[in-house]
Image (cartoon, rainbow, N blue to C red; front, side, top):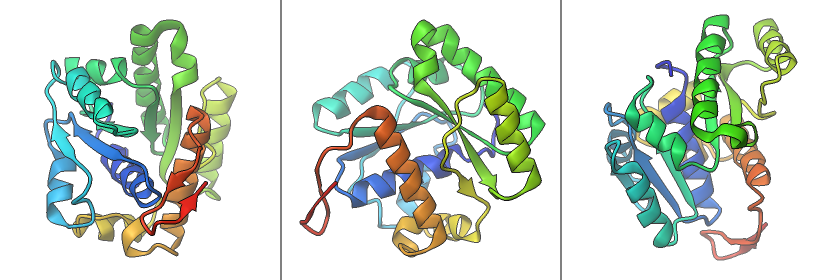
Length: 217
Protein backbone atom coordinates (compact mmCIF):
# COMPACT_ATOMS: atom_id res chain seq x y z
CA UNK A 1 0.00 0.00 0.00
CA UNK A 2 2.91 2.34 -0.67
CA UNK A 3 3.76 3.81 -4.06
CA UNK A 4 7.07 2.97 -5.68
CA UNK A 5 7.41 -0.54 -4.26
CA UNK A 6 7.42 -2.13 -7.72
CA UNK A 7 3.85 -3.38 -8.07
CA UNK A 8 3.39 -2.45 -11.73
CA UNK A 9 6.91 -3.51 -12.69
CA UNK A 10 6.39 -6.91 -11.07
CA UNK A 11 3.01 -7.33 -12.76
CA UNK A 12 4.41 -6.52 -16.20
CA UNK A 13 7.50 -8.69 -15.75
CA UNK A 14 5.41 -11.70 -14.74
CA UNK A 15 2.98 -11.14 -17.61
CA UNK A 16 5.77 -11.00 -20.17
CA UNK A 17 7.52 -14.09 -18.81
CA UNK A 18 4.37 -16.22 -18.63
CA UNK A 19 3.37 -15.11 -22.12
CA UNK A 20 6.71 -16.18 -23.62
CA UNK A 21 6.39 -19.72 -22.21
CA UNK A 22 2.87 -20.21 -23.53
CA UNK A 23 0.46 -19.16 -20.81
CA UNK A 24 -2.74 -17.33 -21.74
CA UNK A 25 -2.11 -14.12 -19.82
CA UNK A 26 -4.32 -11.13 -19.07
CA UNK A 27 -3.72 -7.93 -17.13
CA UNK A 28 -6.33 -6.11 -15.07
CA UNK A 29 -5.40 -2.51 -14.29
CA UNK A 30 -7.24 -1.66 -11.08
CA UNK A 31 -5.01 1.31 -10.28
CA UNK A 32 -6.54 4.74 -11.01
CA UNK A 33 -3.11 5.78 -12.33
CA UNK A 34 -3.59 3.25 -15.18
CA UNK A 35 0.12 2.48 -15.24
CA UNK A 36 -0.35 -0.96 -16.80
CA UNK A 37 -2.52 0.22 -19.68
CA UNK A 38 -0.18 3.09 -20.49
CA UNK A 39 2.82 0.75 -20.27
CA UNK A 40 1.24 -1.65 -22.79
CA UNK A 41 0.31 1.17 -25.14
CA UNK A 42 3.91 2.46 -25.22
CA UNK A 43 5.42 -0.60 -26.90
CA UNK A 44 4.41 -3.62 -28.99
CA UNK A 45 5.64 -6.64 -26.99
CA UNK A 46 2.40 -6.82 -25.03
CA UNK A 47 0.09 -6.49 -28.02
CA UNK A 48 -1.23 -10.05 -27.60
CA UNK A 49 -1.93 -9.67 -23.89
CA UNK A 50 -5.28 -8.10 -23.00
CA UNK A 51 -4.95 -5.20 -20.55
CA UNK A 52 -8.27 -4.05 -19.13
CA UNK A 53 -9.12 -1.36 -16.61
CA UNK A 54 -11.57 -2.16 -13.82
CA UNK A 55 -13.31 -0.15 -11.11
CA UNK A 56 -13.93 -1.63 -7.66
CA UNK A 57 -17.31 -3.07 -8.57
CA UNK A 58 -15.96 -4.62 -11.78
CA UNK A 59 -12.81 -6.44 -10.66
CA UNK A 60 -14.43 -9.80 -9.86
CA UNK A 61 -16.63 -9.63 -12.97
CA UNK A 62 -13.71 -8.85 -15.26
CA UNK A 63 -11.49 -11.58 -13.83
CA UNK A 64 -14.26 -14.19 -14.11
CA UNK A 65 -14.85 -13.17 -17.72
CA UNK A 66 -11.16 -13.50 -18.54
CA UNK A 67 -10.92 -16.89 -16.81
CA UNK A 68 -13.96 -18.13 -18.72
CA UNK A 69 -12.22 -17.08 -21.93
CA UNK A 70 -9.30 -19.38 -21.10
CA UNK A 71 -6.87 -16.92 -19.53
CA UNK A 72 -4.93 -18.99 -16.99
CA UNK A 73 -2.76 -16.17 -15.62
CA UNK A 74 -4.74 -13.08 -14.67
CA UNK A 75 -2.63 -10.42 -12.99
CA UNK A 76 -4.32 -7.56 -11.16
CA UNK A 77 -2.35 -4.38 -10.50
CA UNK A 78 -3.77 -2.43 -7.57
CA UNK A 79 -3.60 1.12 -6.24
CA UNK A 80 -1.00 1.89 -3.59
CA UNK A 81 -3.50 2.65 -0.83
CA UNK A 82 -6.34 0.92 0.98
CA UNK A 83 -9.55 1.26 -0.99
CA UNK A 84 -12.62 -0.74 -2.08
CA UNK A 85 -10.85 -1.64 -5.33
CA UNK A 86 -7.84 -3.06 -3.49
CA UNK A 87 -10.15 -5.09 -1.25
CA UNK A 88 -12.05 -6.36 -4.30
CA UNK A 89 -8.79 -7.44 -5.97
CA UNK A 90 -7.68 -9.32 -2.86
CA UNK A 91 -11.08 -10.95 -2.60
CA UNK A 92 -10.90 -12.60 -6.01
CA UNK A 93 -7.20 -13.53 -6.01
CA UNK A 94 -5.58 -16.93 -5.52
CA UNK A 95 -2.24 -15.38 -4.56
CA UNK A 96 -1.43 -11.94 -3.19
CA UNK A 97 2.11 -10.81 -3.97
CA UNK A 98 3.39 -7.87 -1.92
CA UNK A 99 6.54 -6.23 -3.32
CA UNK A 100 8.62 -4.54 -0.64
CA UNK A 101 11.75 -2.45 -0.79
CA UNK A 102 14.35 -3.29 1.89
CA UNK A 103 13.58 -0.60 4.43
CA UNK A 104 11.87 -0.65 7.85
CA UNK A 105 9.20 1.83 6.70
CA UNK A 106 8.27 -0.31 3.70
CA UNK A 107 8.23 -3.37 5.96
CA UNK A 108 5.62 -1.81 8.23
CA UNK A 109 3.43 -0.72 5.33
CA UNK A 110 3.72 -4.18 3.75
CA UNK A 111 2.76 -5.76 7.07
CA UNK A 112 -0.36 -3.58 7.09
CA UNK A 113 -1.24 -4.98 3.66
CA UNK A 114 -0.86 -8.52 4.97
CA UNK A 115 -3.22 -7.67 7.82
CA UNK A 116 -5.75 -6.43 5.28
CA UNK A 117 -5.54 -9.79 3.50
CA UNK A 118 -6.17 -11.48 6.86
CA UNK A 119 -9.33 -9.41 7.28
CA UNK A 120 -10.63 -10.36 3.84
CA UNK A 121 -9.45 -13.95 3.48
CA UNK A 122 -9.44 -15.12 7.09
CA UNK A 123 -7.88 -18.54 7.68
CA UNK A 124 -6.80 -18.86 4.04
CA UNK A 125 -4.58 -15.80 4.11
CA UNK A 126 -1.39 -17.41 5.38
CA UNK A 127 -1.21 -19.72 2.39
CA UNK A 128 -1.89 -17.08 -0.23
CA UNK A 129 0.33 -14.14 0.77
CA UNK A 130 3.97 -13.85 -0.26
CA UNK A 131 6.36 -10.91 0.08
CA UNK A 132 8.78 -10.09 -2.72
CA UNK A 133 11.94 -8.08 -2.07
CA UNK A 134 12.25 -5.58 -4.90
CA UNK A 135 14.74 -2.86 -5.83
CA UNK A 136 17.18 -4.76 -3.67
CA UNK A 137 20.63 -6.32 -3.95
CA UNK A 138 20.72 -9.80 -2.48
CA UNK A 139 24.22 -9.37 -1.03
CA UNK A 140 23.56 -6.02 0.66
CA UNK A 141 23.50 -5.82 4.45
CA UNK A 142 20.06 -4.18 4.55
CA UNK A 143 18.53 -6.82 2.26
CA UNK A 144 19.92 -9.67 4.35
CA UNK A 145 18.77 -7.93 7.53
CA UNK A 146 15.25 -7.33 6.20
CA UNK A 147 14.91 -10.92 5.03
CA UNK A 148 16.06 -12.26 8.41
CA UNK A 149 13.77 -9.89 10.33
CA UNK A 150 10.70 -10.70 8.26
CA UNK A 151 11.25 -14.43 8.30
CA UNK A 152 11.86 -14.25 12.05
CA UNK A 153 8.53 -12.47 12.43
CA UNK A 154 6.76 -15.26 10.55
CA UNK A 155 6.23 -13.56 7.18
CA UNK A 156 6.56 -15.67 4.03
CA UNK A 157 9.13 -14.26 1.60
CA UNK A 158 9.78 -15.57 -1.86
CA UNK A 159 13.33 -16.73 -2.40
CA UNK A 160 13.33 -14.92 -5.77
CA UNK A 161 13.72 -11.16 -5.78
CA UNK A 162 13.96 -8.28 -8.24
CA UNK A 163 17.26 -6.46 -7.84
CA UNK A 164 18.12 -2.83 -8.47
CA UNK A 165 18.97 -2.90 -12.19
CA UNK A 166 18.93 -0.29 -14.93
CA UNK A 167 17.43 -2.91 -17.25
CA UNK A 168 14.01 -2.61 -15.60
CA UNK A 169 13.76 1.15 -16.05
CA UNK A 170 15.12 1.09 -19.61
CA UNK A 171 12.63 -1.58 -20.63
CA UNK A 172 9.74 0.31 -19.03
CA UNK A 173 10.57 3.42 -21.06
CA UNK A 174 10.09 1.33 -24.21
CA UNK A 175 6.84 -0.24 -22.96
CA UNK A 176 8.36 -3.67 -22.44
CA UNK A 177 10.33 -5.78 -19.91
CA UNK A 178 13.82 -7.33 -19.75
CA UNK A 179 12.37 -10.71 -20.81
CA UNK A 180 12.01 -9.21 -24.29
CA UNK A 181 14.85 -6.69 -24.41
CA UNK A 182 17.62 -8.75 -22.77
CA UNK A 183 16.40 -12.37 -22.65
CA UNK A 184 19.84 -13.67 -21.60
CA UNK A 185 20.44 -10.92 -19.05
CA UNK A 186 20.45 -11.03 -15.26
CA UNK A 187 17.09 -9.25 -14.96
CA UNK A 188 15.41 -11.76 -17.28
CA UNK A 189 16.82 -14.61 -15.17
CA UNK A 190 15.39 -13.01 -12.03
CA UNK A 191 11.97 -12.73 -13.65
CA UNK A 192 12.12 -16.36 -14.79
CA UNK A 193 13.04 -17.50 -11.27
CA UNK A 194 10.19 -15.46 -9.82
CA UNK A 195 7.59 -16.88 -12.18
CA UNK A 196 8.84 -20.44 -11.59
CA UNK A 197 8.59 -20.04 -7.83
CA UNK A 198 5.04 -18.73 -8.12
CA UNK A 199 4.13 -21.59 -10.48
CA UNK A 200 5.38 -24.08 -7.91
CA UNK A 201 3.41 -22.36 -5.13
CA UNK A 202 0.22 -22.49 -7.15
CA UNK A 203 0.79 -26.08 -8.26
CA UNK A 204 0.41 -25.24 -11.94
CA UNK A 205 3.61 -26.48 -13.54
CA UNK A 206 2.18 -28.76 -16.23
CA UNK A 207 3.25 -28.87 -19.87
CA UNK A 208 2.89 -25.66 -21.80
CA UNK A 209 3.25 -24.82 -25.42
CA UNK A 210 5.91 -22.22 -26.05
CA UNK A 211 5.62 -19.45 -28.63
CA UNK A 212 8.13 -21.32 -30.79
CA UNK A 213 5.83 -24.34 -30.98
CA UNK A 214 7.94 -26.61 -28.74
CA UNK A 215 6.44 -28.10 -25.61
CA UNK A 216 8.09 -27.04 -22.40
CA UNK A 217 7.82 -27.88 -18.72
